[in-house]
Length: 287
Image 1 (spheres, rainbow, N blue to C red):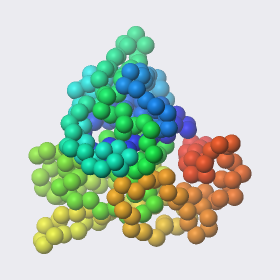
Image 2: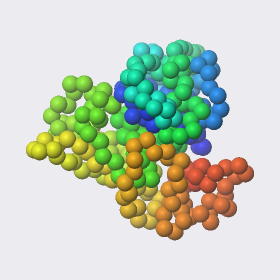
Image 3: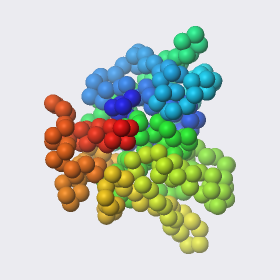
Image 4: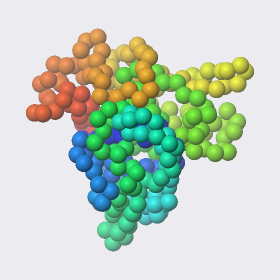
Protein backbone atom coordinates (compact mmCIF):
# COMPACT_ATOMS: atom_id res chain seq x y z
CA UNK A 1 0.00 0.00 0.00
CA UNK A 2 2.98 2.31 0.53
CA UNK A 3 2.70 3.93 -2.91
CA UNK A 4 -0.93 3.07 -3.73
CA UNK A 5 -2.87 6.03 -5.11
CA UNK A 6 -6.62 6.57 -5.26
CA UNK A 7 -8.00 8.28 -8.37
CA UNK A 8 -11.65 9.35 -8.54
CA UNK A 9 -13.55 11.59 -10.91
CA UNK A 10 -14.58 14.75 -9.07
CA UNK A 11 -18.17 13.85 -9.89
CA UNK A 12 -17.74 10.68 -7.81
CA UNK A 13 -16.07 12.57 -4.96
CA UNK A 14 -19.16 14.80 -4.83
CA UNK A 15 -21.68 12.00 -5.35
CA UNK A 16 -24.30 11.13 -2.77
CA UNK A 17 -23.67 7.84 -0.98
CA UNK A 18 -23.13 6.22 2.38
CA UNK A 19 -20.54 3.56 3.13
CA UNK A 20 -19.45 2.17 6.48
CA UNK A 21 -15.81 2.30 7.58
CA UNK A 22 -15.00 -1.20 6.32
CA UNK A 23 -17.00 -0.76 3.13
CA UNK A 24 -14.91 2.34 2.45
CA UNK A 25 -11.74 0.41 3.17
CA UNK A 26 -12.71 -2.33 0.71
CA UNK A 27 -13.74 0.10 -2.04
CA UNK A 28 -10.67 2.33 -1.70
CA UNK A 29 -8.28 -0.62 -1.57
CA UNK A 30 -9.75 -1.86 -4.85
CA UNK A 31 -9.84 1.60 -6.46
CA UNK A 32 -6.14 1.98 -5.62
CA UNK A 33 -5.49 -1.04 -7.86
CA UNK A 34 -7.08 0.72 -10.87
CA UNK A 35 -4.64 2.46 -13.18
CA UNK A 36 -6.04 5.86 -14.13
CA UNK A 37 -4.65 5.91 -17.67
CA UNK A 38 -5.40 2.29 -18.52
CA UNK A 39 -8.74 1.01 -19.85
CA UNK A 40 -10.91 -0.65 -17.23
CA UNK A 41 -13.68 -3.09 -17.98
CA UNK A 42 -16.53 -4.04 -15.72
CA UNK A 43 -15.32 -7.65 -15.90
CA UNK A 44 -12.05 -7.14 -14.03
CA UNK A 45 -11.97 -8.66 -10.57
CA UNK A 46 -10.25 -6.80 -7.74
CA UNK A 47 -9.32 -8.50 -4.48
CA UNK A 48 -8.51 -7.33 -0.97
CA UNK A 49 -7.71 -9.56 2.01
CA UNK A 50 -8.38 -9.26 5.71
CA UNK A 51 -4.62 -9.62 6.21
CA UNK A 52 -3.97 -6.62 3.94
CA UNK A 53 -6.65 -4.51 5.67
CA UNK A 54 -5.24 -5.38 9.10
CA UNK A 55 -1.68 -4.53 8.05
CA UNK A 56 -2.57 -1.26 6.31
CA UNK A 57 -4.90 0.03 9.03
CA UNK A 58 -3.04 -1.20 12.09
CA UNK A 59 -5.98 -3.28 13.32
CA UNK A 60 -6.02 -6.85 14.64
CA UNK A 61 -6.35 -9.60 12.06
CA UNK A 62 -9.32 -11.13 13.88
CA UNK A 63 -11.12 -7.79 13.82
CA UNK A 64 -10.50 -7.40 10.10
CA UNK A 65 -11.85 -10.92 9.42
CA UNK A 66 -14.92 -10.19 11.52
CA UNK A 67 -15.83 -6.97 9.72
CA UNK A 68 -14.79 -7.88 6.19
CA UNK A 69 -17.51 -10.47 5.56
CA UNK A 70 -20.35 -8.29 6.87
CA UNK A 71 -19.05 -5.28 4.96
CA UNK A 72 -18.80 -7.23 1.70
CA UNK A 73 -22.41 -8.40 2.02
CA UNK A 74 -23.67 -4.85 2.60
CA UNK A 75 -21.50 -3.40 -0.16
CA UNK A 76 -23.43 -5.26 -2.84
CA UNK A 77 -26.59 -3.37 -1.88
CA UNK A 78 -25.00 0.07 -1.58
CA UNK A 79 -26.20 2.71 -4.01
CA UNK A 80 -24.56 5.90 -5.24
CA UNK A 81 -26.25 8.93 -6.82
CA UNK A 82 -24.17 10.69 -9.49
CA UNK A 83 -24.97 14.22 -10.66
CA UNK A 84 -22.26 14.89 -13.27
CA UNK A 85 -20.52 13.07 -16.08
CA UNK A 86 -16.81 12.12 -15.66
CA UNK A 87 -14.00 14.22 -17.16
CA UNK A 88 -16.19 17.33 -17.20
CA UNK A 89 -18.13 16.17 -20.26
CA UNK A 90 -21.22 18.23 -19.52
CA UNK A 91 -23.92 17.46 -17.02
CA UNK A 92 -25.38 14.01 -16.66
CA UNK A 93 -28.92 13.28 -15.60
CA UNK A 94 -29.14 12.30 -11.96
CA UNK A 95 -28.05 8.69 -12.07
CA UNK A 96 -28.75 6.13 -9.35
CA UNK A 97 -26.46 3.13 -9.64
CA UNK A 98 -24.45 0.65 -7.58
CA UNK A 99 -20.80 0.54 -6.65
CA UNK A 100 -20.37 -3.10 -7.63
CA UNK A 101 -22.09 -5.71 -9.76
CA UNK A 102 -20.50 -8.71 -8.06
CA UNK A 103 -19.03 -9.32 -4.60
CA UNK A 104 -17.48 -12.59 -3.48
CA UNK A 105 -16.32 -13.39 0.05
CA UNK A 106 -13.86 -16.26 0.17
CA UNK A 107 -14.17 -17.21 3.79
CA UNK A 108 -11.37 -19.77 3.91
CA UNK A 109 -8.95 -17.18 2.53
CA UNK A 110 -10.40 -14.07 4.18
CA UNK A 111 -10.59 -12.35 0.80
CA UNK A 112 -13.19 -10.07 -0.77
CA UNK A 113 -13.30 -9.99 -4.58
CA UNK A 114 -15.45 -7.51 -6.48
CA UNK A 115 -16.30 -6.20 -9.91
CA UNK A 116 -17.20 -2.53 -10.19
CA UNK A 117 -20.56 -1.70 -11.70
CA UNK A 118 -20.67 -0.82 -15.38
CA UNK A 119 -21.75 2.77 -14.67
CA UNK A 120 -18.89 3.23 -12.18
CA UNK A 121 -16.08 2.40 -14.62
CA UNK A 122 -15.88 5.86 -16.33
CA UNK A 123 -15.53 7.51 -12.92
CA UNK A 124 -12.47 5.41 -12.04
CA UNK A 125 -10.56 4.85 -15.27
CA UNK A 126 -9.18 6.89 -18.19
CA UNK A 127 -9.60 10.13 -16.26
CA UNK A 128 -8.03 13.01 -18.19
CA UNK A 129 -9.37 15.98 -16.23
CA UNK A 130 -11.47 16.94 -13.22
CA UNK A 131 -10.29 14.14 -10.98
CA UNK A 132 -8.97 13.92 -7.44
CA UNK A 133 -5.90 11.95 -6.40
CA UNK A 134 -4.48 11.06 -3.01
CA UNK A 135 -2.44 8.31 -1.35
CA UNK A 136 -4.42 5.42 0.11
CA UNK A 137 -2.14 5.62 3.16
CA UNK A 138 -3.54 9.10 3.89
CA UNK A 139 -6.85 7.62 5.07
CA UNK A 140 -5.84 4.05 5.99
CA UNK A 141 -5.76 4.61 9.74
CA UNK A 142 -8.92 6.71 9.92
CA UNK A 143 -11.66 5.20 12.07
CA UNK A 144 -14.54 7.18 10.56
CA UNK A 145 -16.06 6.94 7.09
CA UNK A 146 -17.08 10.61 7.43
CA UNK A 147 -13.42 11.49 8.00
CA UNK A 148 -12.51 9.76 4.74
CA UNK A 149 -15.20 11.64 2.84
CA UNK A 150 -14.13 15.00 4.31
CA UNK A 151 -10.52 14.32 3.36
CA UNK A 152 -11.52 13.60 -0.24
CA UNK A 153 -13.56 16.81 -0.41
CA UNK A 154 -10.55 18.79 0.81
CA UNK A 155 -8.16 17.04 -1.59
CA UNK A 156 -10.41 18.02 -4.48
CA UNK A 157 -9.57 21.67 -3.69
CA UNK A 158 -6.05 20.97 -2.43
CA UNK A 159 -4.53 23.90 -4.31
CA UNK A 160 -7.12 26.39 -3.10
CA UNK A 161 -6.66 25.98 0.66
CA UNK A 162 -10.31 26.74 1.32
CA UNK A 163 -13.64 25.15 0.51
CA UNK A 164 -17.18 26.24 1.29
CA UNK A 165 -20.13 23.86 1.18
CA UNK A 166 -23.79 24.29 2.03
CA UNK A 167 -25.24 22.24 4.85
CA UNK A 168 -27.99 21.08 2.54
CA UNK A 169 -25.46 19.74 0.03
CA UNK A 170 -23.37 18.08 2.76
CA UNK A 171 -26.39 16.30 4.22
CA UNK A 172 -27.26 14.98 0.77
CA UNK A 173 -23.67 13.95 -0.06
CA UNK A 174 -23.36 11.98 3.20
CA UNK A 175 -26.94 10.69 2.96
CA UNK A 176 -27.68 11.74 6.52
CA UNK A 177 -31.43 11.76 5.91
CA UNK A 178 -33.29 12.74 9.06
CA UNK A 179 -30.29 12.19 11.32
CA UNK A 180 -28.93 15.16 13.28
CA UNK A 181 -31.57 17.75 12.33
CA UNK A 182 -30.20 20.03 15.06
CA UNK A 183 -27.11 21.90 13.86
CA UNK A 184 -25.41 21.44 17.21
CA UNK A 185 -25.80 17.66 16.99
CA UNK A 186 -24.55 17.70 13.39
CA UNK A 187 -21.44 19.62 14.39
CA UNK A 188 -20.82 17.43 17.45
CA UNK A 189 -21.49 14.05 15.84
CA UNK A 190 -20.36 14.51 12.24
CA UNK A 191 -18.43 17.67 11.39
CA UNK A 192 -16.01 18.01 14.31
CA UNK A 193 -15.18 14.27 14.53
CA UNK A 194 -14.51 14.19 10.77
CA UNK A 195 -12.23 17.24 10.98
CA UNK A 196 -10.45 15.65 13.96
CA UNK A 197 -9.82 12.54 11.84
CA UNK A 198 -8.29 14.65 9.07
CA UNK A 199 -6.05 16.46 11.55
CA UNK A 200 -4.95 13.30 13.31
CA UNK A 201 -4.47 10.83 10.47
CA UNK A 202 -3.91 12.70 7.20
CA UNK A 203 -1.19 14.92 5.69
CA UNK A 204 -3.55 17.91 5.94
CA UNK A 205 -4.39 20.24 8.79
CA UNK A 206 -7.93 21.59 8.76
CA UNK A 207 -10.05 24.09 10.64
CA UNK A 208 -13.61 25.12 9.96
CA UNK A 209 -16.10 27.88 10.54
CA UNK A 210 -19.76 28.45 9.75
CA UNK A 211 -21.57 31.04 7.69
CA UNK A 212 -25.11 32.19 8.25
CA UNK A 213 -27.82 33.20 5.84
CA UNK A 214 -29.99 35.46 7.93
CA UNK A 215 -30.11 33.87 11.38
CA UNK A 216 -29.65 30.30 10.16
CA UNK A 217 -26.33 28.49 9.66
CA UNK A 218 -26.34 27.63 5.97
CA UNK A 219 -22.71 26.96 4.98
CA UNK A 220 -19.47 25.54 6.36
CA UNK A 221 -16.11 27.02 5.42
CA UNK A 222 -13.04 24.78 5.63
CA UNK A 223 -9.52 26.19 5.63
CA UNK A 224 -6.71 23.67 5.23
CA UNK A 225 -3.13 23.10 4.14
CA UNK A 226 -0.25 20.65 4.09
CA UNK A 227 1.25 19.62 7.42
CA UNK A 228 4.60 19.19 5.69
CA UNK A 229 4.76 22.94 5.01
CA UNK A 230 6.60 25.08 7.56
CA UNK A 231 3.67 27.44 7.64
CA UNK A 232 0.10 27.19 6.33
CA UNK A 233 -0.33 28.37 2.77
CA UNK A 234 -2.33 31.50 2.13
CA UNK A 235 -5.81 30.52 0.99
CA UNK A 236 -6.65 31.04 -2.64
CA UNK A 237 -10.00 30.78 -4.32
CA UNK A 238 -10.49 27.80 -6.57
CA UNK A 239 -13.24 26.75 -8.90
CA UNK A 240 -15.35 23.63 -8.53
CA UNK A 241 -14.13 20.62 -10.45
CA UNK A 242 -10.56 21.89 -10.76
CA UNK A 243 -8.17 19.03 -11.37
CA UNK A 244 -5.80 18.18 -8.56
CA UNK A 245 -3.14 17.65 -11.21
CA UNK A 246 -2.36 21.38 -10.80
CA UNK A 247 0.98 21.83 -9.05
CA UNK A 248 0.85 22.77 -5.39
CA UNK A 249 3.92 24.99 -5.24
CA UNK A 250 4.77 27.48 -2.53
CA UNK A 251 7.06 30.49 -2.71
CA UNK A 252 10.18 28.36 -2.19
CA UNK A 253 9.40 26.11 -5.15
CA UNK A 254 8.03 23.15 -3.19
CA UNK A 255 5.28 20.69 -4.00
CA UNK A 256 3.25 19.38 -1.04
CA UNK A 257 5.84 21.03 1.18
CA UNK A 258 8.78 19.08 -0.31
CA UNK A 259 11.56 21.21 -1.87
CA UNK A 260 11.91 20.92 -5.65
CA UNK A 261 15.61 20.10 -5.27
CA UNK A 262 14.70 17.00 -3.25
CA UNK A 263 11.92 16.02 -5.67
CA UNK A 264 14.22 16.29 -8.71
CA UNK A 265 16.90 14.23 -6.99
CA UNK A 266 14.58 11.44 -5.84
CA UNK A 267 12.04 11.29 -8.66
CA UNK A 268 11.99 8.04 -10.65
CA UNK A 269 12.29 7.78 -14.45
CA UNK A 270 8.98 8.69 -16.07
CA UNK A 271 7.51 9.93 -12.78
CA UNK A 272 6.04 13.43 -12.75
CA UNK A 273 7.22 15.85 -10.06
CA UNK A 274 3.70 15.87 -8.57
CA UNK A 275 3.60 12.06 -8.32
CA UNK A 276 7.12 12.00 -6.92
CA UNK A 277 6.21 14.59 -4.29
CA UNK A 278 3.14 12.63 -3.24
CA UNK A 279 5.19 9.42 -3.03
CA UNK A 280 7.90 11.10 -0.93
CA UNK A 281 5.26 12.62 1.34
CA UNK A 282 3.72 9.17 1.91
CA UNK A 283 7.14 7.62 2.56
CA UNK A 284 8.05 10.30 5.11
CA UNK A 285 4.87 9.65 7.07
CA UNK A 286 5.60 5.92 7.30
CA UNK A 287 9.36 5.98 7.77
